[in-house]
Image 1 (tube, helix red, strand yellow):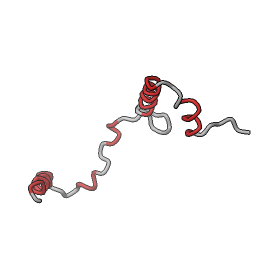
Image 2 (cartoon, one colour):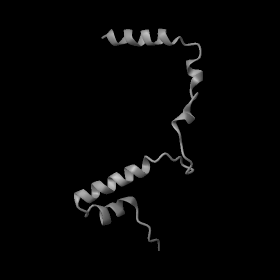
Image 3 (tube, rainbow, N blue to C red):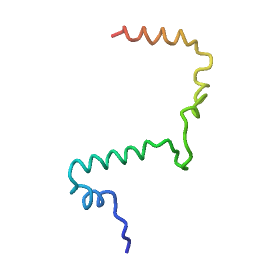
Image 4 (cartoon, one colour):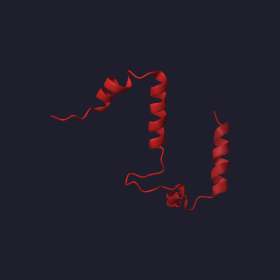
Length: 77
């Protein structure tokens, strides 16, 4: 017999009964935990690791021409 609770069971049995302020604190702790700069393997992740990703998409594209075309599209209905 497994003593593991599903997320729904955990919420219903343990969390829902907490006062609102405690639930908000818990939500903040969970959000903080999830926003930590760690990848799935526990290694720190840096935004700089994304440098160059997708560069091939922009090869041969004139940046100013692209911006001009985007700005023109804003004026069209």
